[in-house]
Length: 319
Image (cartoon, rainbow, N blue to C red; front, side, top):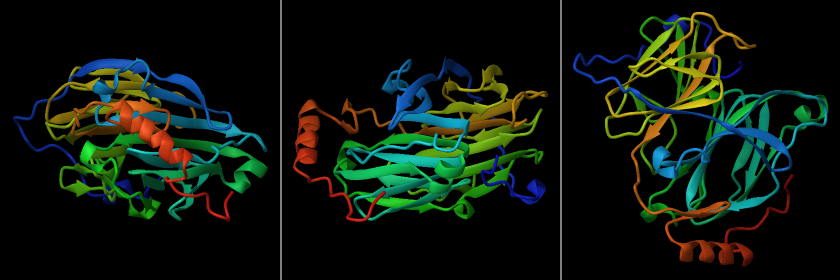
C-alpha cells in the first residue's frame, strides 16, 4: 500500500492516551458498505448514507471507497464536470492517481497518500479523472472520498481549495511502534494534521500490523467512527469484530481503540482503517444530488444558480 509509509516506524512520534480515568468508547452499531455506481461508471463501496441516517454520522454526509481494484488498460473512469454547494469534499488517494480541476483554478494530481480538500461553499464546478498513464497502462486504484457538512453560517462561504501533499501529512505511531497513523485533519493528542476545516473534525488513516493495538485520545464532544479499508480486527472497548468494508459507529467516551487480528487475509496483509469523527452540527439538512443546504427553498435556489452559471465556469483548458 503506497500511502505514506515511513522506512523506520520506530523513529516516529508516539500517540497514546495518558488519562487513567478515560472512558473507552464501545460500539453502538456496525454496518456493511453498499456497492454503488458513480460518475462515468466506476464502482464504489459506500457505508453512508444508506443504511445510516445523516444524524448517525453528523457532521459527515457521505463516505465512498474507490477500489482497491486492479484496472486493465482503458478501464479507469472518472466523473464529468459537476457542481457542488454547501459542504466540503475530501479526496484521499491511497494508491493510483486521480486528477482534479475546478472552476476556481484549483486542482492537480492526487497520488500515494495525497489529499485534495475542496470547500464548495457557495458553489463550485469540478471534475475528477484518472491519470492518463493509469488509463493507458492500467494499474491499481484505491482512494476515498469524504463529504463534510458545513454549518449554516458557512454554507455560502467563498469556494476554496487545499492541496495536501503526502509529505505534509502528520505521521505518528502507537506506543508499541507497530502501527502507522497518518493524520490528515484534526488532532490525536498533541499531534495535528494539516487539513484546515470549517467544521471541527479528526480524520486519519491507520495501518495496523497483525496483532497491533492503537489507543487514541478522542474529544468527548466528537462523534467517532472506524471504517475498515482492508483486513480485519476489533474496535471499541467491547472489542467488536470489524472486517473489510464495514463501518463501526462508536458510543460516547474519551478513547478510541482498534486492534488488528493476529492473522490477516488479502493482499495488504495488514488491518487498514479510517478513523473519523467531528463536532455534530445538529442542523436541518435538505439535500438534492450535489447540493446540501438547510431548507428546500435553498436547494431550489442552488439549482437555479447552477442553471444560470453562478457557480463558476468550466475553464477553457480542461480535461
